[in-house]
Amino acid sequence: MKAGEPLAHAADSAAEPMYAAAVKIYPREVSGRFARLRNVAVVVLLGLYYSVAWLTWNGRQALLFDLPARKFYVFGLTLWPQDFWYMALLMIIAALSLFFFTALAGRVFCGYACPQTVWTEAFLWIERLTEGPRQRRMRLDAGPWTLEKLLRKGGKQLLWLAFALYTGFTFVGYFMPIRSITSAALGGTLGPWATFWIGLYSLATYGNAGYLREQVCKYMCPYARFQSAMFDKDTLVIAYDTGRGEPRGARRRGTDAHAAGLGDCIDCTLCVQVCPTGIDIRKGLQYECIACAACIDACDDVMDKMRAPRGLIRYTSENAVSGRSLPRVRGRLLVYGGLLGAAATAIVVSLATRTPLLLDVIRDRNALYREVRGDRIENAYSVKVINEDDRAHRYLIQAEGFDGLQLAAPAAPVEVAAESVATVPVRLQAPSERAAGVHPIRLRVVALDGADFERVEKTRFIGPVEEEHAHD
Amino acid sequence: MSQSVRIHAGVVLWSSFLAGAVASVVFFAAVDPALLRDAGPRVFDGLDREAGYALGFLFLWAVGAVASALAVFLVRTARAESGGNASGDGP
Ligand code: SF4
Ligand code: SF4
Image (cartoon, rainbow over all chains, first blue to last red; front, top):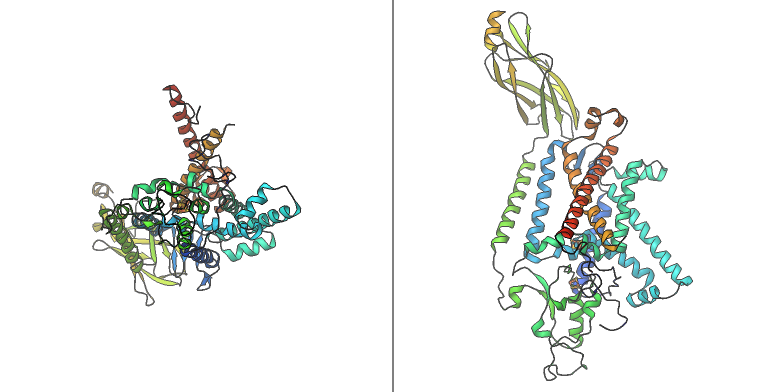
């Protein structure tokens, strides 16, 4: 490593074997196929993040996990706390996809889609905008405080802070209606908790993307540590072709490397300079590598200039490097893929067949049963009819279970407004001679007005016990 | 405060933050904080749901932090006793 190159990192620093004494890394800007791909990913993902919060659907926010109201709106779908299953399934699907794609293609998520990567990239753009490219930034940091340095650094901080604040605000806008928190923020009436969460998320964005950067990947990310468990010899990784590159060494352009006894690596260290985590990929696969492919772009450029074939550093797999080129279909992939398919099918099927009606039946707590008119036994229930649909419905309540069971109330169908809950007192009666003992029964609630769905809930009808009846 | 202590504190706070966040999601998906308030002691009267979420999260985070700190403490002191390198941060 040349003197003055601030490239020291964890593996090189003898003082702290476990944790880097946070040497600041100045990743050099790259251009090339993968850099373009990442830029596209960053623009698309950030674009989605900042705009989807403002989309409306049927007159309300399209994607809103309304925590204060405990209702989740996902476009046309309204999920209630009772629909927790869907959220659980969605999380399982997300985890399985991560497993699947990690086994298939290594850490593609890290390099292109992880929020940490995406926001770090955006913060780096701001940094380049205000402080200039890598060499300029390093000189600026090393130099004395001049007016220019103050302006450049101050401008960067201002942009960073504004961007982080807006990011935190948008984040909270997915959990509280974004239009109402906007007007509250503008009017200075934002609640203390909304302020707290916006502050927390902004601070996290500012710290993680502005300062911690690659250290989040190295020290804080659990995924980075356990991903190796999902790797196998066919997993796509970014690797340096040692056989082709070594022995490395500087040479004049046009030198015949082989005649000079050299490999293709000219030891320009560009692959190290561009690396956002500050590692040297030529030392082999390291867990710090987030597979961002910046070193591929940098090296391809060099190979082009040297008129050597590209791909000294490339996406490849352990098997491919050792000559076994055909990626096999692996048990691991089949298992992850199978589970993923099953979970996805489950969620699609259950959403397609979902009934936007839920019941919660509670028996009257005060009395097991009541005698009415001398010859009938009555049980009382309180039935919560939860209409999850986005329009009002009328529901007919029916009871079934044994001969003679009759509905005494409610007398007419009940009307429940869109997305609301009605608590309906229900009374059931049966002739005394049929009612003795405990009867399992079913309450059926049928939607009228053309909607064609119903929900059945089990409960019990309790009558007097035989001896007690005789005793009376 | 040595660097290793600071790093350990960071790891404790961070891992308990992750666990607390996941625990809050799971817990509050099933339980409405408003119901807890109504069933709980009088000191919680007047708090709204948002306060419930935030306090619940902070509480779960704190519990996680205590557990992780205890784990780190026990692991570190155990290593010292077995004659190894006490703090793991070099000579
Ligand atoms: S290592 Fe972790 S934080 Fe870093 S890019 Fe990958 S997933 Fe994101
Ligand atoms: S080694 Fe290459 S792919 Fe890995 S993090 Fe560094 S630049 Fe990115």
